Image 1: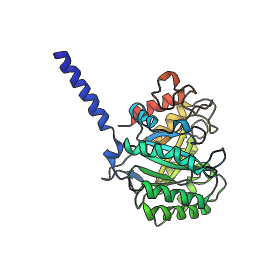
Image 2: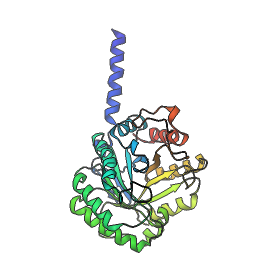
Image 3: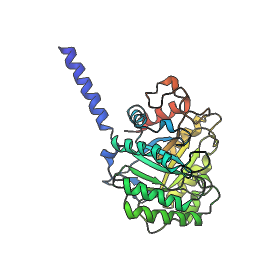
Image 4: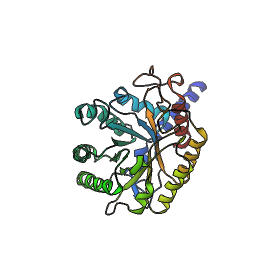
Length: 319
């Protein structure tokens, strides 16, 4: 009898802990106050999570069971659906129906599991008309949910900040017709590294806008951390929507020292961050082996070193 009682109490504790880990229930409608991402009640929030790989290369991971397992075992507060816009076949521009078939189950699963979800226009080139159409659809259908975060442009490469500001203005105006308050992320020039250009001339007239910085720790060192911190001090709300511990190519050895330096910096300045990527390519940044199932559960024998390190970070820093 005593053993049964203790077992029951232990099960209840586990159940309560699992129920408590519901970021959207805890924080509700996110907002930007000054440079800080905040909960609905104004409390500062740091989101930490994982990005899926390109939908058109790894569609098999874009399913509700994968999202559920991530929440249960890795403990992200945000996930990122990286919708490939160009480059590889079956991209959004060539096959928009397939793209939506991939990302919408992830969006719906995030909503069901009380996670925030970044809907990422994963492009390196401007495609304004197509982006307007896409974000009109997403904001009309999902804008009523506080889970949604819009990422307007993954990584600009050649575009000037003036051109990017015009692009962002067009898309923000479209989204705000249907969704007045969810967070919008905008990239900056040179692979999301020239955040100082944003600080020189930020967008005006909008609320709940943040700007993205991307880093790969073995390539991007103290100079980029300094640039990011300086931009924050100058009034720029920053969100690191893509990052990892290896070289910018996504390959090469992990640099745990530099990765920890980035984590320490982001935690000190309460900057939200997401790590790349839930995929199974033969490269350092892909977190799973090809024999990993599409839906989880993923035990240690199918999780690569970068995935294990990320999972440890998420378990350590998230609620």
